[in-house]
Length: 239
Image (tube, rainbow, N blue to C red; front, side, top):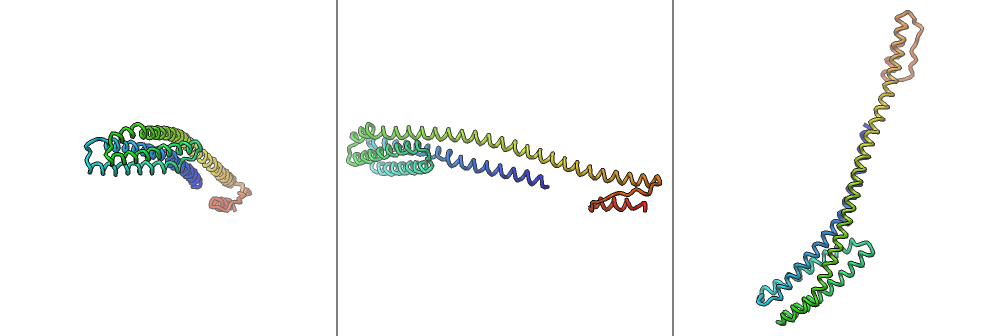
């Protein structure tokens, strides 16, 4: 029972550490990839809505809907980027995020100017300004998002490899501990059985001597357990 408890404690310790390791990897590597990819998707969706808004014949109701969608996409992208920024701990990574934030800020300013031109009915001017002066900021921001996502994915793969190695080491550790405890159990069992055999051999020797007529032999017993009491009683038979 004691040995099983030891194996259980080792197994629980290893499993707990592995669980914590996977949780940290999910929060620090996998979630950031998700946020970055979602920010890029929202940026592209906002770009598509702006381009549709720049087309002639959109209609007033559709224009209002597209403007609302553009604002929603922009807000969602900013939220995802903010979530990622909270996990950016490396100095270089923080610098990249700052550059990314600056590019997106310039894009937002240009986008607002485009919507103003659309509201004034200056679609050709708005389209030219958007494609020439605004889109480059968005393209650069999305390129940076791609690089950050790739870097986070690489880190996640490295952590996954380390986690796999840790799990394999843990499995070997548990197996080794189990075998060691099993060997110790067998060793203790063999030692205990040997002691019992020696004590029983002494009893047999005493009984054999009594059967041969030698009533002077006595069995020395110091143990107070059940076997010791039985041997003591047996040793007193010649008397």
